[in-house]
Length: 197
Image: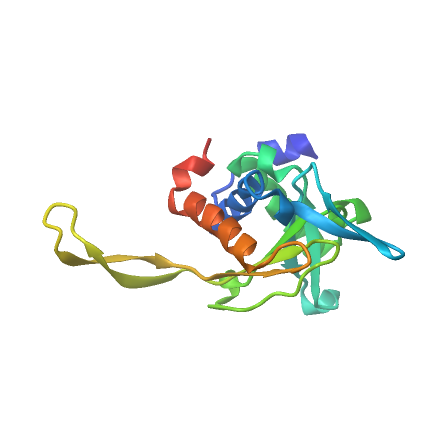
């Protein structure tokens, strides 16, 4: 399968950048890449060594509809092209034949992107045992007021804005931790060249 994935020549999508940014941000925020472990009255936090990003996939009505989550294993160690090839392969397989248990297992964080379906903003439900999920809306073209670098005067510039909403298990990841993680992921996405390395 790996040889087939590498052989594919694909254009990169916004979702590929999001998946890689989320994976790399885990290095600065390891608690987002963890699970709550309950054993009787005793509870603990397990921080995962691997970064396995789950990708929510909508199934067609003829396959029963609904959502499933495919696992991009060790996503922090993969480049954009490999992530792109794997996400496309898994999405196609999920919609046509179905995924194996192995292809859906061991996710440590999930991304649900409804932007490609024209949704601007939504809130996703955590996919246990993950402690967080990122809901991604579509990138909307709009005008922004910025300060002109030469004159310092306000100026209009056209760009894209995308909403990302993170739901988290507050037993481990509170609002401040979630905001810090999103800030790191946002930094990567606003400087996409950093994701090419």
